[in-house]
Picture 1: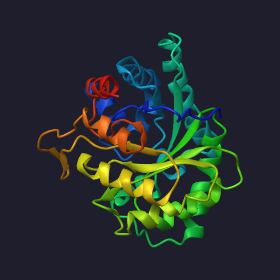
Picture 2 (picture 1 turned 180 degrees about the vertical axis):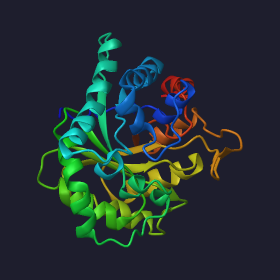
Picture 3 (picture 1 turned 45 degrees about the vertical axis):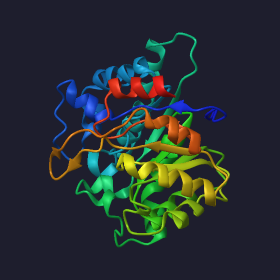
Picture 4 (picture 1 turned 90 degrees about the vertical axis):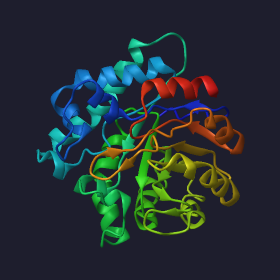
Length: 288
C-alpha cells in the first residue's frame, strides 16, 4: 500500500452499484455489486473508469458486499474474487492514465452487508467485538494484501464493529479510513459520533475518519465533530439524499457545491455513495 496524499483534498467516486445498474446490470440479488464482480468483471472496470474520467482520483473496489458466506465458494476462490476487485480498479486506472495520480481503496463493508437485510443501517448484531473481529479477519487480510493504496472500512453502523476492525488493523502497517453510517450526530446504532470517532484516534493505521452512505445534511456536523475529537483528516461521501423504503423515492438532494464547505471544515476526501452518479462527481471535482 502506498497510502493517500491527504495534504490536499481528494475526490473519491460515487455509487458504484448505481453506475452498474445504469449500465443495465441486475443487482437485485443478495450479492449486489459483488455479483457483477463474479459474473461480468468488464462491467466493473467500465463503472470505475466512468468515475475516474469524471474527475474522481480514488476508486473504491467492488468488495463491499463480498463475503465467504455470500459467494458460497471454497475460500481460495472467494479470496481470488476479493483480489480481483482491486485488480479491476487498477485496470480502470490504467485506462485513464494521463499523468494524474490516482488511488484505489479496497472496500471493507460491515458484517451487516453480508446479511443483505439492511443491518448495516442498524448495527447491534448480537455479536461480541471478538466475534466480529473473527468474522472480519480473513477478508480484511486478503484485501490488505491485494495491492490497494488504502482500506476503505466503510458504512460501519456501530462502535462495537469499529472496535473489532481497528483491533485487526492495529500494528499491521496497512493504512485505512473508517467511516460510519449515521443518523444526525449519532451512529445508526445510536451512539454519539464523538465516541465513535475516538475509537480510531490512537490507531496509527487509521489515517482518516468520517461518514458515508448518509444524508448530505449530516455531513457538515460530522466533519466538525471529527475535527473536535481527533487530529485526523476527514472522509465524507454521502448518498444522493433520496430515501430508501425498499426502493428509492424522492428527489436527489446531493449538493456538489457543498463540497467546498466540507473541505473548509476539514474534509480531505469527498465524494458520493448510493445514487451519486459520475456527472455529480464531476461537479464535486469542479467545486473542489
